[in-house]
Image (cartoon, rainbow, N blue to C red; front, top):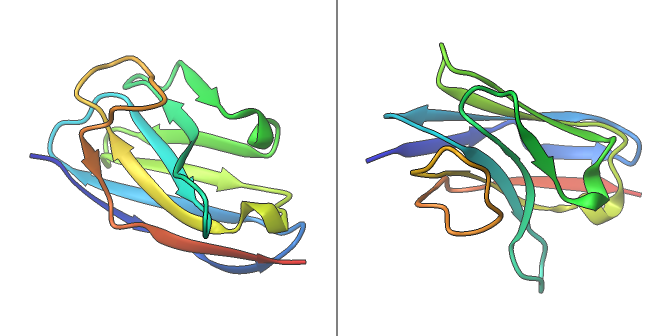
Length: 119
């Protein structure tokens, strides 16, 4: 069983930056960040394989967000720069049972952290 705990959310002005962290207990493979805005479905934001050598991003965040991981700390990060009002959402960390990045079907989820961007 894997438990995930996110942190780092908050309120920031448009153009600002935030870094989200997700601390995992237990063995993890590929991991990802998702987000869900009010009235919208949860969407894939970024994913990373166990080694950190392969990443994937939704088009809307490419060039602004960076996913990374520190396996010694069993933690995955999402550095978010140039934030926009449309990035406002609850951000969730997810862990997979396989070591390739997918945009759905993750087995483990965190409780979510709120990111709010004011315009």
